[in-house]
Image 1 (cartoon, helix red, strand yellow):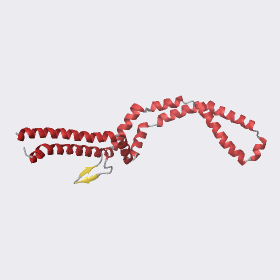
Image 2 (cartoon, rainbow, N blue to C red; image 1 turned 90 degrees about the vertical axis):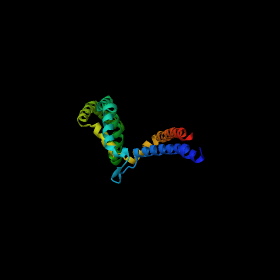
Image 3 (spheres, rainbow, N blue to C red; image 1 turned 90 degrees about the horizontal axis):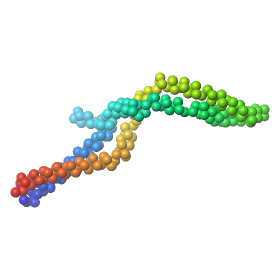
Image 4 (cartoon, rainbow, N blue to C red; image 1 turned 135 degrees about the vertical axis):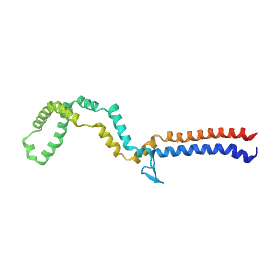
Length: 207
């Protein structure tokens, strides 16, 4: 077998098959994410799978998350576990310090007649009053949310509003190694098929 035959029958099939495997898998990986905007070539629409199916992805993901991972009843149950009295008391104390402090600074005459001890007593009584009613208001809030919360729709709208180019970048950063491995596997498989073809050529023409 001459050198030209070795090149065309043995080496070239392996090279071309490996190159074909790399290029086809690379193109497949690219078409998962790009192009973001549709392009038409000879009437054929070219667009990345993820951008093209963003609405379907939003529907499926929102349904799965709201059904399996982040259920509405779990959120409402969490709200019921919060200590409303403690939270309300802290809120009143924080607001008192800021708002009453501003009021006394703007009206210094009041500070001449109302001592800090009296102000502290008023503050504590107001905090106790709001804290005692906090649990009732929390339950009203939860009942109101039960009729209004739509977790699936909220997740769907957020996914649809998410910038596809940014999502593509996140996927590329996370799956950089795996995406490159897909390209490499394509090259390896191509080389294997090329070797098979070279072996067939050898037995067919080598003798």
